[in-house]
Every structure is written in C-alpha cells, then in structure tokens.
Amino acid sequence: MVFGASGPIGQALIARAGARLAVATYCGRPFTGGRPFDVAKSAIADLPVDWSAVKAAFVLAGRANPDWCAANPDSSRLVNVDGISRLADGLAARGVKVVFASSEAVYGGSGPHGEDEMENPPTTYGRHKLEAETYIRRTTPDHLIARISRAVGTIRNDGTLVTDLYRRLLEGGEVTLAQDQIFSPILLEELAEALLRLVDGGAAGVFNLGGPQPVSRVGLASLLTAAMPDGGAAAKVRAVPFSTFQTLESRTLDTSLNIARVAAATGMDFATPAQICEAIVARGRAA
Image (cartoon, rainbow, N blue to C red; front, side, top):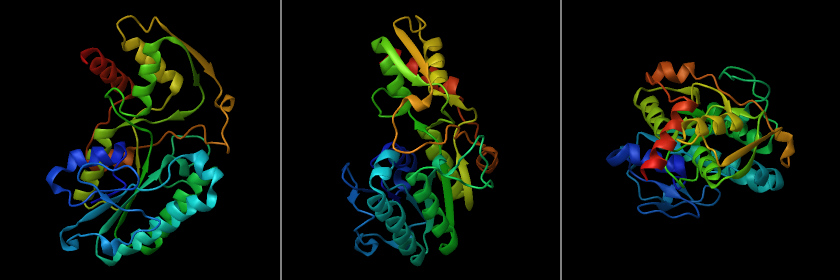
C-alpha cells in the first residue's frame, strides 16, 4: 500500500510492486487506479481495504517544498507532522508496518551522514520530517524510516533533477548551478527496489537511501556533458555558491549519505552519478 503515490517515487513503487500492491492513494494529482486521500483530512477507516492482506504501507504523502514549508509552517505541520502521525496511528492499530519516507533534510553539518548521528535540521521542512520520525519511532512498534536523498529518473521529462539538467544543457546557453551543495542521488527504480527488499527482509529502524557517491549540480553537469557525443558544446555552466540562490531558510549544504547499512541489508549495488548520467544521455539519444 502506498500513500501519496502520485509523485515519481510513488509511481516507481507502483511499477516495481506490481500485483503485490493493494491500494495507492493521491491528493490533488489523480492517476489511474489511485484513490483520493488527504492525510490532513481523510480517515483511514474510509478506505475500502482488506487490512488483513496489507503487510506494509509506504507513507510518501506530505508537503516537500522547503520554501513552502518555511512560508506556511502551520499548514506544513498540519500535513507533515499531525497528518502523518494520525495516519501512522491508524496503520499501527491495524497491524500494518509503517514505512515512512523521511528525508536527507533531517541532517545538518557535513556529510556523509550516518543514521546514528545527531540530527540538526536547519529548515522547517527538515524539522517537521524529524518530528514525524520521532513520533513514529516512539509510538509505532513495527516501523521503518527511510531517509531519502534526491531520487532521480533517466527518462526525458520525468520531472526529476538530472533529466531536467540534461534538458537545460541540450538547449544551450548559460546554466547557473550551485557548486557547493552536495547530495547522493539515487535512481528511482533502485530506491523502489531497496524499499521493497527492506520490507521483505523484515528490516526495521532507520535507513539512509541514496547513491554511493556524493556529487554537486556542477559535478552532474560535468558528467552529463562528458557522456554527450559533442561534449556538451552548446552548454555553458556558470558555477556559483548556493547562497546565490534565494531561499527562505538556510539549507544544509552537504546532505550526502553513508549508505553502508542499506547496502548490507539489501545486497544492492547502487548506480554512481556517472552511471546515472550515462544512462540519461543514452536514453536521450535513443528517443
């Protein structure tokens, strides 16, 4: 079961789970087969579900734009803390494992971040994610917390970070990118597979889910142009500090993740940034 399945991660889970999936929900962005559910307003009891057949629920729902959360802290809390907590209570009461999609945003300071370090989120979004985590860990016996880095796809116009960057590079002209914001991108299909393997293996607790190597947006642009037949001749990258971009709150510049725990639990080898960029370019050329 997936709550908040209309985004890229939810759709990847639906594709990977196939017939195993009982119900997937959306709020505001309908998709074929999805059921409407607003975590801030809807009641879990109203869902037409045979709960005895549901092993786990992936909770992806929530507001994910940090600036929106900073500008609307009360509305953010209503969804990202209160709504998620109420949903977790309802799932636990029905004997369903709660798999909560948290974020790299719970970390502060320098990476790579490990699951056992002290969290220090500088943003409202990160603090609300951490509050929801804390509530679930305290009140829900069977839970798994997934702290997810930037999940990216390889299909043109899929709405994810690296494919969008590839499009901008192809269009030519100057592309302004942060050189000092570091993260650990992970392929959507590998993220979905890892989540399913963790659940199937009975994993519990907190897991970082990201790729094996840290990279910046400038680094991704270099990897993409290196994979392009003409070396990205039409593109010009202007590298600037992240502080150049206006945000309502300061951000953690290095959210790269230590993924040793999830790699050991799943037995997976995750794609590197170079492999992701090569796959995007190859698919773009074949399109």
